[in-house]
Amino acid sequence: MLAVHFGAGNIGRGFIGNLLYHSGYETCFVDVNSEIVNLLNEKNEYRVVLAESSQEEVTIKNVRAINSAVNPEQVMAAIAEADLVTTAIGPNILPLIAGLIADGLRKRVEQSDKPLNIIACENMIGGSSLLKEKIFEKLTADEKAQFEGRFGFPDSAVDRIVPNQVNEDKLMVKVEPFYEWVVEEPKIVGEKPSVKGITYVQELVPFIERKLFTVNTGHALAAYFGYYFGMETINRAMENEQIRGLVEGAIKESGAFLVGKYDFNEEEHNKYIEKIIGRFSNSYIVDEVTRVGRSPIRKLGPKDRLVSPARQYQAVIGKDPEYLLKGIAAALMYDYQGDEEAVQVQTTINEKGLEEAIKKFTQLDATSSLFQGIIEQYHQLKSNK
Image 1 (cartoon, rainbow, N blue to C red):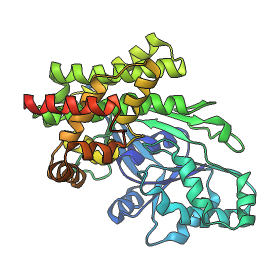
Image 2: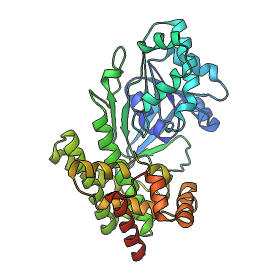
Image 3: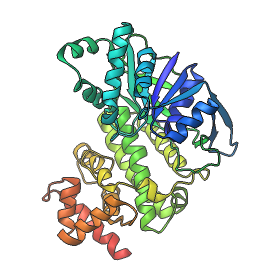
Image 4: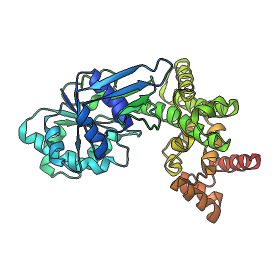
């Protein structure tokens, strides 16, 4: 079996490529990083090390790679032969690979009528749906009709912490032991891909929101509160009882609306929260707060990990959250000069005022209690500096 995977970075190799290998696939990575591509073709294997006391190591074999910038026709040929296509390249890059995948699918249609599933494993809601939309923009009306029943784009939710790392062995990846890969079964065409580690569900949105508003919310807040209190790494931040309490308070608020909205078992969800807090505290994962907190404008967006759970908490629970609003305020205070978006946020606050910045980045109504709550929490944090 052949899997074509776009993105030979740490997530691609340490998470998706790892599971594909253990499921019996040959994995063909597609990337534009010539150094990584050349190393994969030279060695045809790489190591994955678990970030825990055992430091367990596995060797991932049966891999190769194609540089899509240099050899797009080879990528098209691989897609034409593939049993599965996956991505882990970042939401912003998905539209950039749509044309190449469309060309590969055209080539496939010429050769066979075998169905194919394309699964975007990205940190976003509806990644595969977005990729499908961008691919279909490249097609004629006849091609759209032909592709519709033959190629599936099931959305997925993925979760595994792979810290920023520099290793002597450029292909080696260190990953946390925990992982989750949930895939929407109704959008599968043909047989379900036989990948060990995938959980198939009928409805994906509850699982995406559970992950996004627990893991991503908590991780971002550990970064912003950590930065506020002068911590350099996430695990050190979580050793601080005050920061830990703030992060836990926020994801318990998001948990309250998730349980109410999707009827999750409350006891099981609380155990899930405990597990997430434990993952952030893992001393074998050293992740800088400035990496996890990067791109605050995106994270402050109305549908993202900070504002959306605050709005949904208010809608479902019927009152304003405390910790989530404090977290939004901490994100607005994030002034790391090495982050372009952080600089942009601070420039907006300095030149146009806090209220204009909140309005611009969160798109909350200035008359809402959430908006006023953020202002209060911001000034409270500012006065305690």
